Length: 108
Image (spheres, rainbow, N blue to C red):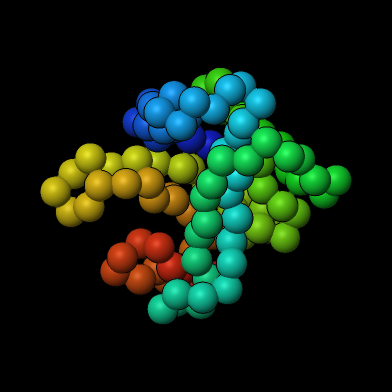
């Protein structure tokens, strides 16, 4: 399962509304190689499912990931911060053994 916090849910709804995206669009999250710790998170809106996608719904938000990324993201919560130390989405990943200072890169 991949989860979403209440603040992230609110921000996803705001962004979808601003972009005039309908309910066919969902949040796609994935893990790609790169970043200072070896792996980086990627997040975008998408409306096309793939055969090997893993599909979750939390708090009414549909979250989709590919099978390979799911191995790294299992149990992760997509969160959003409005704080002084950085505004934006971030991933709370219990599988990450190390992450960089910017919070966009991790290793397992």
